[in-house]
Image (cartoon, rainbow, N blue to C red; front, side, top):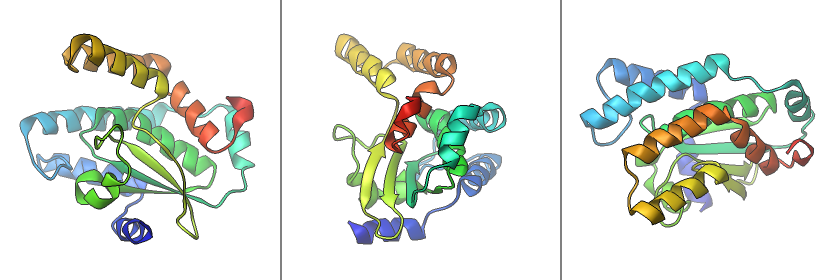
Length: 201
């Protein structure tokens, strides 16, 4: 496992590099996927706009900021994602805001280029992203994981699939409405809990 983590980290990029990669590929008419399609390209365009908006508008409140700055931890966050993933577009910018505030080193790898890593962090047997892996920085011990989405939303989606048998356009639209209404609150609370900042949760 440690070998797989080290190999993936060698291929990892920073958040700012990831944002440039997504934008540069879009300028070439491509997505980050190992297979290209018009559908994935359209998802990537939409998600790039979402990430740009969150990068500009999302801010942690003063209490959360103060608590994160007081953290004395030696963590590494390794995030598996892709530019076409709708859930990732809503959560990865927030991960980055928290990591920057807490001085946590955050690295990003693409799912399709890191299959061995992804296979160790499946969700209900699926390659669901984004997946945040919290590591002890020196030893690369896996301390915890998060993803692909907040628990409340995950429960809604599971219930919808049980009722309708599939995840159709309706639930996909409802998912984005949920994210826009929640404004990152659930993601922040769950990541703070991951970090042990429980007094704010």
